[in-house]
Amino acid sequence: MKKFLDLISEEMGSAFERAGFDATLGKVSLSNRPDLCEYQCNGAMAGAKVHKKAPIMIANAVAEELKESAVFSQVEVAPPGFLNCKLQPAFVAAYLEEMRTAEKFGYEAANEPETIVIDYGGPNVAKPLHVGHLRSAIIGESIKRISRYAGHTVIGDIHLGDWGLQMGLIIYELSLRQPDLVYFDPDFTGEYPKEAPFTISELEEIYPTASGKSKEDPAYKAAAMEATFKLQSGVKGYRALWKHILAVSVADLKKNYATLNVDFDLWKGESDGHDIIPGMVDYMKKGGYAYISEGALVVDVKEETDTKEIPPCMILKSDGASLYNTTDLATIMDRMEHIKPNSLIYVVDKRQDLYFEQVFRCARKTKLVGPETKLHFVGFGTMNGKDGKPFKTREGGVMRLENLLKEINQEMLKKILENREMDESEAKEIAAMVALAAVKYGDLSNQASKDYIFDMERFMSFEGDTGPYILYTIVRIKSILNKYKSQGGSLENLKLNCPDSDSEKNLMKEIAKFNAMVENAYQEIAPHKVCAFIYDLANAFNRFYHETKILTEENEEKKAGYIALLILCRDVLETCVDLLGFSAPERM
Image (cartoon, rainbow, N blue to C red; front, top):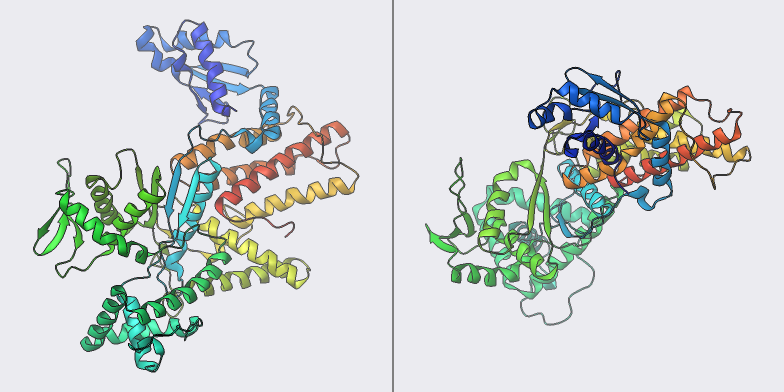
């Protein structure tokens, strides 16, 4: 199904052609003066030089061709040659009727579906999720959903931090606390226990303790590094402990991410690149890409067009140890071999921009990826408190994500119970849904690269550009539909009316933007476009609702048309909030 604005532009373009001008001049855009018209075309000015005619003459000739248009009800010429247009109500209704009956509202999925890997999440095992993990999870999840809706095969990978010194720190601290564990007995040949010798709570206490000791005691750090070496060298007891750490951590991570309505197709980590690294290093050396500089193995990634210094990409340190660069490149190598993606998208803090520039250039230069493979870095800004500084607890520490969500849920529950009587279990369920919408919409309504203020009070408001306002609009529509059914009306076999009020027509025009919006949000990797669309749509619906007697309309055919429009509006809104990663309750 063609996009709404494309159809309008086609009609304008054919009028330009009939008047003797280039059809490409007929591009139509939304009016920047909605008080004057709905759409405008500035093609007459662009065509003046080409056709050697005054813009006003071109515009008048085109307007004459559109007098009997089935698309435009009004085309007025304004100096020096603007074409100001209004649409035929019947044209708008016909487009929406086609949307209403088409699969995915007529959205045309990609002709050549791509395979896309999205790398988001990136938590370290054995550490609790904190607010710093929020943006990557929320933004990555939405990009995944939008890309799938656009018709692509999308694989989300959490890319765990599960290798390196932090593992050695935990294992060494455990060896001091529980030295009799069989994992530390080099002569043990039996089966290792299936149950971990620690809980997630204990694990989350062990790591910061060990980390603190290593900063103060060089001998402690050296012992932890030795434990790390043993783990990476394949010492069986250490590997068995590491598997316990992973299992306990991942179970807890899955629970916390589920609360955020975020999931991953792959639960791989840095460790999965470990066995690939030797072969990759050998390949880079033999291919003449990597060389020794000051003892380290590096690949030059600077280009002649660079206006700033881009340092070489380090593959191995002078002591032969690998780095984040090494594991990320090995992961790319693994993905290209086993998944063969057309596109790789990394959702990471924007301060990692230079790092990913180096990694991407290195991957291209060493031919780990072909020139046709798209590499995207979606760098997100900081989530700040009202003081403009990175969000902290009242005590000044980094807030655990679990605690933040609990706090917001409790505040939302209080709000809901203050406003209406409801069974507490139902209220808790609704509060969790609305709180999640508040958090996700509060984040996603900002362009990802921008820093934003995490203002819980504003995000939880049922008015303004917020998640609860969007959900309240959906619930309002559901309530009207339920009342219509209780009055004996059926939601089946309905047909849209030709709009007979500005608010009804405006609502239809907002819905008609859906297909173009999804395509734009996908192409620009921009979930905030979805938020902007549903906010405008919710506003258009609420204006229509306040100006129209829907359920008390005496003309049954007209009332049924209103109901058909409401069903379409609800469905589009619910599709969009699903793209953002949350959902609406049946009532609030």
